[in-house]
Length: 485
Image (cartoon, rainbow, N blue to C red):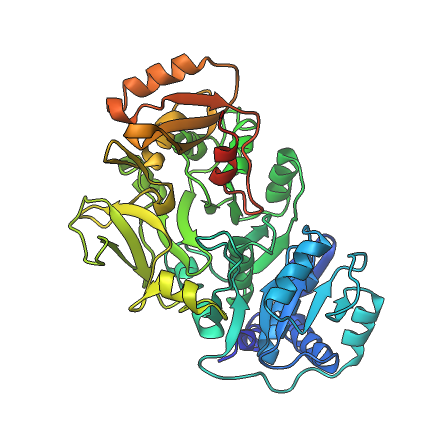
């Protein structure tokens, strides 16, 4: 069944319930089905067809969400293109995946080549005038989304996700996280990003409400919007949650209406999690996810108390294994290569057989992470396989050292890398950002009481800001280039 079919059901069962709130504009569920079908029909009149790759470079507005579902109605393939990218970046991705057209904001630069349709007056007039699409595209393997990933080489890759696989990614939202048709979800993360897009889409699919609150914004404005709109769920990156902690100084929790405060993307240490539960929201959850497969595991508030160094247990219908270099499962507690499979996981990269063979094997996806699982099913990440440090023949996992550094009250962010070191192979170097000045010798002393001698960083370098990609992940290759010669 087509992803857009649910809107006709929602229009009948909850016609007056808000679907999308975009600033002062509200789209009810009775109107969303017609709007999606009319947008699909208008895009079809402009040349969009089933199987076409269509670049979506729209801002975080109602048309962005409507267009994604409209393309699903047609059976076209969505190619996310961040509206914050330069024209050169957008063109590179659109050409890489042979897009037949792109959807852009009115003022976005675009010259020649691939046709562009802009979200302007002609868009709105055209959508209003065209009859709704009568028949939705169908098919069990109907392709839907190129969920862009950097892969292991840094080159942009496109895991191709079908409509059925994408719908299966909604399951854990409803089963594990408690999101449903009564939820009021604040979309405060760019819709270009996997988490921001998927949570917003799942809320519309099940008949809930999505309130758009696009960045940039100040933390105080975010708090006011959550309170004003009576928001029950929000997905935020750890950097922003840390900024909210600075506002949570009163005796009451900062965001009492929330039934789900979700974070993903980078680790938070146990003391931070405790402070978030006590001062921001007791409903704080963390999820481990990948662009290729969606959500993998969930750490609930209760789990944080007893397994604070874990990323939780597998989500519904997700299977996780830790294997050795021969792809044989390892016993509980042993560190190895993480692999998983789920109904929502892509099965390969679009037009890239070599990358598919590298990361997909026998129905399993290998995200490139190292991990361990205990006998209760809790997953512990040990870092990226490519970031593994081998010092004197001993495997050292950067994630463990980073967690120790992050536990220090003055350390805001930490990244650990290996530096070539002659006979030892590699030595450990840590980069940190600090809340206030601190001598590196103090951090070394901190590590000595918490780590084995061979895991102690040989150098700790304080920097003002960590280099990050557009998804907020630290670029360790860039840090390596900053190492002293």
